[in-house]
Amino acid sequence: MNVINFEDSRCKRVRSYLDSYLNNELMVETNHEVLTHLERCEACSRSLEDRARVKAQLKHAVMQEYAPAALRERIGVDLRRSRRFSFNTFSLAVAAAAAVLVIAAATFLTSSPTEKPLSLQAEVSPSDLTGQVLKIGFDDHVFCAIDHQLANKQFTPEQMAEKLGPEYAGLVALVKERMPRDYTVAVGHRCHYQGREFIHLIMRNQNDVVSLVITRKNGEAFPTDGVAAIVQAAGGPIYHAAWANQQVAGLETRDHLVFVVSNETSDANLQIAMSLAPSVRDLLAGLES
Image (cartoon, rainbow, N blue to C red; front, side):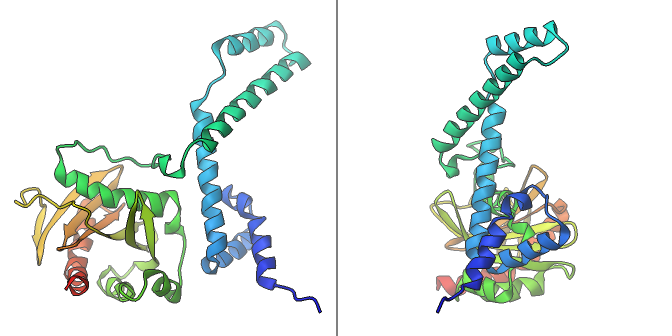
């Protein structure tokens, strides 16, 4: 008797749509089918992330390459000689395009995914110790919520509990209680960037996205004098920076760095950080004791 694996069949069907999904070419019903499947299938979600990364890298590589000046001049001369696009000129243009694609493919194959630049950059002076620490949270927010589009996903409570693990599973309820009422917790998981592990919660409302990012210290700390702090909240100071229209608030415990990153206003982002800080500090203190 033949056994039909319906889940494999669904995965195969959804993966055949992924390129069209990335290009926003699917009909509404099919797009909903793909989204629903991705929410509960980690393998297909990873496949989507891989395809998005490859697409972005190829686009970046192609945009950095140009046909040689002599080749561009020769094509221009041929075009000026005739209003009609002759076969020879067409062949030349095709050859130029093929050469660019070969260069792009070589660039992709010889580069590591970790070398891909973030879509949003934080320029920080080496002497700005506060900025160097806050950049850790900013970079993970951009890498995960924006570049890998996790801000567009919706995990179930069971998925979040599984991905966060027992130590941090209670973080979801804690954040729900402290966030403004119009926000929902969309994603809770562990992610990795630049050799670090992060506990990452993504909250969103109709217009805004907020990340709560927690990572263990690796020798980093905010300046001990607290002069750069924007506020002195219960339990310790909170620091602030802004890059590329993203607001970053940061605080620390004995062993952890905590960041709140969003496209909210500076005051709103700071208010969220102040609201979350006491409970998050208490949770981390329990893990550190």
